[in-house]
Amino acid sequence: MGNIVVSLDIGSSKVCVLIAEMNKKQFNILGVGTSECKGVKKGIIVDIDTTVEAITNAVKQAEQMANMNIKSVYVNIIGGYTTLYKNKGVIAVSREDKEITQDDVKRVLQAAKVVAVPADKEIIDIIPEQFIVDGYSEIKDPVGMVGVRLEVDANLIVASCTTVQNIIRSVQKAGLTVDGIIVEPIATSTVILNDDEKELGVALIDVGAETTDISIFKKGSLCYSKVIPVGENHITNDISIILKISSADAEKIKRQYGVAQASMIKNDDIIKINNLAGKGQKEIHLLEVAEIIEARLSEILYIIRNEIDKSGALNSLAAGIVITGGGLFNIKGIQDMAQSYFDIPVRFGYPNFIGVANPIYAAAVGMAMYELKQKKTSSIDYQSMHAEKEIAVTEEEDYEEKEKHSIFTKIKEFLADFF
Image (cartoon, rainbow, N blue to C red; front, top):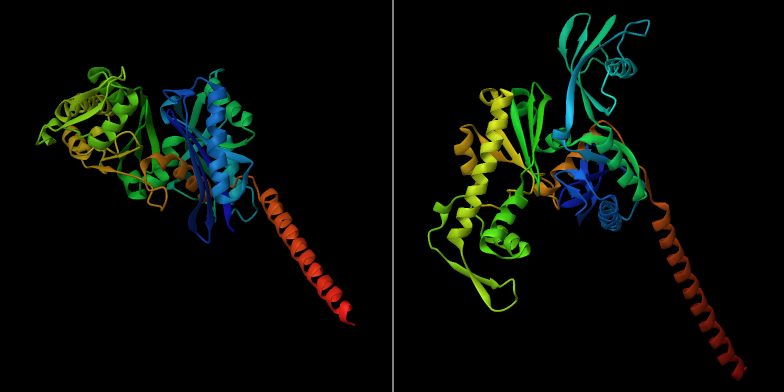
């Protein structure tokens, strides 16, 4: 058994818990659990009790699958609700032989955290852009090098104290400890993007239920993040309101028949669903459904392009755009439509692991992989479940012993009758 990490993805429509291990450089998923969540609106926790219930349900599923008890988790925060502060840290190398150690790296990162932030904000993470050893820059990992002066150019990730504390409170009320808070696009990029894409310049578009997170990576680091308050639920709501059907029926139709452009409908087929009033059935034209989806998708893609354009990065995204998240995954033709909007390469990204090969797991898988690569671990407990097994075995052995004793007694009594 290798190092084990538990990740907790709190989203606007669902909570996902994932248990993973790194064993001999092999990433393995041990357990996963998902639960519907109605306590989060547009990426912000608005109902702690409802969120706690969803966390608890997802944790139980993951525990049963992995046969473990979860004690602590790493949890996400949407990138668009954070702010990036650039800062520099400088230290003198401590060893006499001037070899840079991991302790020196920790000290220089700590030095970079010394900066004034607003009273209602707190630093949740630090991302080194480059290390500088005695004036030599663009160093990714200085450990083992020799130098007198170590510097770092870093991005401090700052978030609202209220947002952070509500996340922590929800996790704690579910009976868990928070190992750390991870900015979602950094985690997701670990499993969705490759190093070349992040180095050349790429936009990661994570479409969720109620929000879309836009994150831009350049030279290997996150340099821009923005959240827009639209997601897949807006498409479902449009279908529900315009066609006067329930949200549940609208979601089913979107997932089963949804296409990105009305021109993809060759025959205007008709499907029938139950009326909201419960009397009779209602006819739904698939062409009309496609027109509704296309109109909302056009708006979402326009807003995304506009935000990337405002960031000044659209023309420098050499690796193009990568779309992930469960919001658009089931809509046929979305990749071609997005390609026409951005005029640069567009692809869909999802975790390529058995059991979680779906964009809805991108954040949870990414968090686990991100922390395991840094050799971090979560607290889990094997004892209680193993103890139950041991008790069961003991009782079974005791039963078998009694059976044996009973048989020998009967044989003895039987022989006694003759002798």
